[in-house]
Length: 438
Image (cartoon, rainbow, N blue to C red):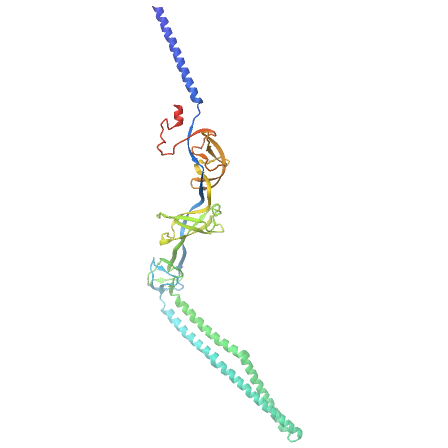
């Protein structure tokens, strides 16, 4: 009995060992099959598309008015009255304020009278005194000439009589003396007339004109001082500052009013030299201001030809229309400038681009064999999350958009559904790799 029972027990142990060995062999076999099976990596695949790309330079900038004038009085005087307030719209030449000017008005009136007197004296000199003097000199010269001719005739007659012995020598000598006197008188009268024509006329006119111009200068100076009491706007715009009240003292050199032209504004910024090199006058630009949903369109108006010595940056201006005065001077806004546009560019998402340590770029192209193949590419401009491909890809090719980082070349891939879609679950049938494992 015991011998038969012992043989049964031994048989059972042997059978259990064979079963265990068989189970272990099956497990090892399954484990070997799983190791040999290639993993499939789920990735997102995107096509290479043709689109219009723009290279945009973005920076913060500050708004300035297109024109601004701080009206500074040239004289110190109390403010008599203001004709405008803050926010008043004014035009060029409009009277904005008046300073006390009674003393200046009196001085201007006094000098006006002196100027009128000098003008009358000049007219009298040129129209009456000088012509009369010239006429008198001409008459004197004519009378002296007549006396000279008469004395000459008397002398010639007596000379003939003396030669015939009909006249004594004494009378001939007297005729000679009279002739000499007449000749001298004529020369004096003739020189006086010539002097009036050559020198006297110019000197008299110059003196009279000098007195007139001196009086005119004093009058115009007094009138200018009086005009300084009237503060007028040099530009069209809006009054943005008026620090004084009527009756307060306005000081020369201190702004009394500030006028800004806000019909247009400039957005000014300092950008790196490399970015400024891409821009030129006339490039399109967009400004976004805080609290305003609609962007403002403009154009680059100035690209400074020199670097700022303090920051080694380049100052740029963008000119913008400002309907309704929505853009306020001093506001910080976001400025975007289109440096270059490329129509029909081949583009891929920036996430699909792989950059090596040496700077070379490549993508993982999704092949028709279900594998990812690494392809070197050359890039162009960037616009937000898109990159231009200038060499290495063709329109319509497909590349790994997400999941290419660290993916070995020639890896087996499957297209994963976009994030957030209904097909992005983790069921066995939706995850090819998991299904193959199972």
